[in-house]
Length: 233
Ligand code: CA
Image (cartoon, rainbow, N blue to C red; front, side, top):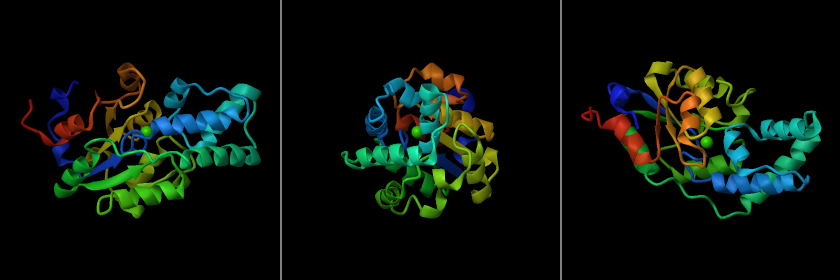
C-alpha cells in the first residue's frame, strides 16, 4: 500500500462515493454464479475472471458484450430481458451476501465526520437497492444512490460518477471514491475523482493500478486508515 503521499487532505473530503458490489457487499461470488448460470442457459461460458473484469457494467451492457463476442451482434431487447431476468432470478434465489467486514463502521465514521455517503452502482435491481437502504438504515438513503437506471452510459464511462457529482453538488476534489473493479476505477478517474481501489476479488492488484487507482488496498480498515488516520506519515 502506498499511502504516505496521499494522506494529507483525505480526512477533509465532503463525501465518499461507494461502489456497491464488492465494496459494500461481499456479493461478487453470487453475481458471477448467477451470470454463469444465465449465460449457461444459452450454452455460453462466462469465466470467473471475465465476470470480474467486466464488473461495474449494467446488466444490458454485459449481455451486449457476450452477444458481440459469441454472435457478432448486439442483443435484442427481448434477449436482454430474458437473460437479465434469468440472472436476477438466480441471484435472488441465493443466500443474501453479507456486508464487507468493517464497512458499517467506516460509514458510521464518515457520517460522524460530517461526510455524505453516496452509492454509485451499475445495479438496477430495485429490491437490492431497497435492501441496501434497510441494511444501512441511517447511513444510506435512497436519494443518494445513483443506480444503473439513472444513467445512459455505464461504467467505465464517467457518467455514473459525474451524475453523483452533479446531484451532490460537490466538485471532484471534495470527494473520494471506493471501488473494487477495474471498470469502476476507470469511470471514477475519468470523472476526476481520487479513487481508492479495494481489491476484494480474484484479480491481481496490478490490474487495479493499471485502471488508474490512486491507491490499492485489500481491506476496509485500510480504507479507514487512509481517510481518517492523518498522523500516519
Ligand atoms: Ca463493484
